[in-house]
Amino acid sequence: MTQDRKPNSSFGINTQLVRAGYDPFDYHGFINPPPVRASTVLFPTAEIMETHAQKYTYGTRGTPTTNALCDAIDELEGAAGTILVPSGLAAVTIAFLAYLSPGDHALVVDSVYGPTRHFCETMLSRFGVEVEFYDPMIGAGIETLFRPNTKLVHTEAPGSNTFEMQDIPAIVAVAHRYDAVVSMDNTWATPLYFRPLDFGVDVSIQGVTKYPAGHSDILMGTVSANARHWPRLKETNGSLGICGAPDDAYQVLRGLRTMGVRLERHQQSALAIAKWLESREDVAQVLHPALPSFPGHYLWKRDFKGASGIFSFVLRVERKEDYKRKAQAFLNALTLFGLGYSWGGFPSLALHVSLFDRKVTPPPTGGPVLRLQIGLEDVGDLIGDLERGLRAAGEA
Ligand SMILES: *Cc1c(COP(=O)(O)O)cnc(C)c1O
Image (cartoon, rainbow, N blue to C red; front, side, top):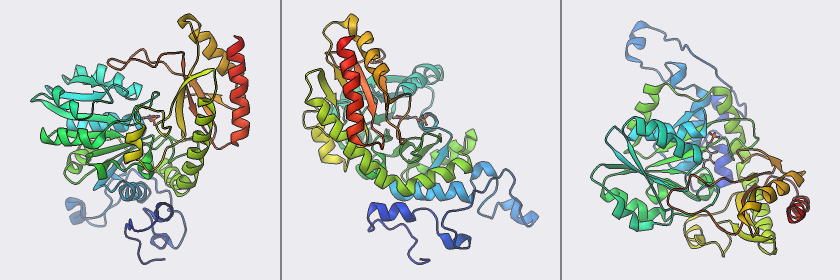
């Protein structure tokens, strides 16, 4: 067991997940790493302190526990380096702060995670960065939006709440011709189902709050970069002093060990429920990239290895003034689906999606958009619950 601990992508993904980031014989054979909490790290001599010639120097710069998670994420992402931050949102904002300066122009996908848009429209614009939102389906056409000062293209696929796919290789090819950094929020797929860096993306971002943590109790984000862009990311992280806590890192690493089997189950159940919804008269549309009826399905099929457990559907409602009442009747009738934000944990969740902030992509028509996170419950029970919700919406 002590041999062969090096990252080895010839192993299957579940084998990698079980082994990544930590060798039990680094710590007396215990299967999990110790949660090492620290501010101060001692140096044995003044000379070593002067030159920082030891692996750990201060708590903000990492401990063996946070390092174990960073190493595991590096292996899964195929990255040169990874930083940990206290939330998925902080992972996006720190990446933007690393690669953007006053006077720069950034292209951000219109189906971006809502709080990312908020950051762009408030702090980034206050710091003199001009952000332009683009159509997720733009592909190579993004070239028409480039300016001499375009420094960053931010992608997210599938998009938040509406799940639009993006042609990542086409966007990367254009961006690199203009020497712009390409970042991707890959929280939905995780590196198990899509590896951004393999497709030319420079910086891969994950809200590991979601599937890696997996139990609705931890907040953490990771940012992983390729060799060219790693030094700037590491420097920014050090400058800002924003770091992930060792206890949280411990829990995320623990979650990673079972993420493969959990994701398979989320995938299967979500797809079964998406197909069931698609067959119903009272559902206008199902927004799930793995359904052949979905507009960006060919991109998902071409580039992704799987689908996770979150998608949306459009409840069929004729009149706009009925949208909210019907959506709320649906949600209030659910007993197994909780009403709450975030996803990737074991329980199922539902919410009414708000799309008022979209700039270039019109929201789906035909009724209110409802988002479902399919948890680890039995599919038959979840379908029973959704039937109850749909009946209530029909009667409302
Ligand atoms: C949830 C989410 C985040 C943020 O994660 P938090 O840890 O909740 O801040 C970022 N991006 C996407 C796409 C998300 O869904």
